[in-house]
Figure (cartoon, one colour):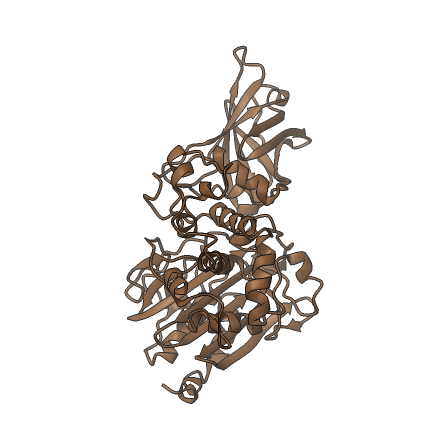
Length: 497
């Protein structure tokens, strides 16, 4: 199909996107579509700043979250091309002091393993989320984090492994991951607006604020700085820059007559490395695999390579159909929004000349609620979990304090875990409160030495179980089920003061 016909097939897309913003209570979104070297759509919708009524433009910067991971894989591929790195040489050959909890993984894990999520580690997200530790310090915590699967046995989405891969890339290049991405990808591709920190983004003239729905209303929330774990998700970009990134992918690493990354390495990144879980398994998307920094799937019979991303107040989807030479990027400033998916899939349907699927209905469970349209048109909606790096809506309730069997002073103190770090338990006028990585968590007594604790940032309640000394006067440790994945053990924090 010619570019002209493709552009014609998108007639009415403005109205569809406006409907999606209304349907899913979205604040703003930016959408670009390319065919080969032609940009056939590039527009902003809604607001980048709702309070000031500033509209989204093609130049508006958004946090792209885990869509960053493809950039990290690309920097590794650059080093493979240069003979500095090998996909299948153990990481320990490059970082002598590298250590994981599992001795087999320590000796055998490669950067390919890290980049296709088969390390054996569950999420362990609270190791890094809001942590004050540096990237290097977080890499050193890996030796204290227990796996819940055998090494290479299962695909498990893992941000810490991507951080470590980026750290290794920087070390091998005698620089940082950020500097390497800037020099080898952003600069040659002309991605002149893209940045690595939300602090720097807020110094630019055109950027989106993050929003979260609370009580049916969109509320501006703080930007989430994730610099330490940057290779897993810290890039901020806009349509103009992401168009160049998509064209680079469609050209298999070639850019303006120069091979930035060899076609051989691009093929590896774009090829299945592990069968993976997917929230989209359906008739249209019957199977899912993971390459290196990309999900590799078929969409209604067409090869599709894509990756989503989400961090506090932002969501993204970057996708391309290599055989059809089509690329799509959708950026959003609404927390956990499914608009990047409903819009991207709808555009694919139109460009491929297929009857559009009602993705709003199919993905209605993504945010744990149903839209007005879904309620009117129930269609056995697809069950879709929250995306891997998404923080969910805050749910704060007044604590229901039950008289404790012993003084709060028995539990108050400082507790540590070698991987997770320090947790403080303090007595307040409302009872006990836990503080971890500067996140305050109200504690509600439930039964003997057990408390229900509100993890406000993630909208969850978890259980703290204290173990006391022999005289049952002072707590010695806390057992906390921080990992909500099968086969994981509670994290044990030991009292130090």
